[in-house]
Image (cartoon, rainbow, N blue to C red; front, side):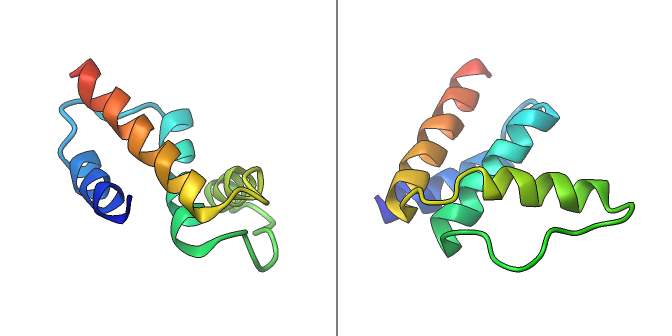
Length: 84
């Protein structure tokens, strides 16, 4: 699975179309959960809207195993590649 996860990280960089913001947040969250486990630290506040959105997306995966997050990441990248 680790090889497929690494390959998916490379594949996402060469997608022909940039995914929408919701998909990008999902990719970010799955990547972070797959590499680091549950979110830690405090949620960014103030006017850091992007940081807050990233934190929230990652926090939504709390409790998911790193292996499951990696599998989901690989599947999502595969779907994005198939769309062209």
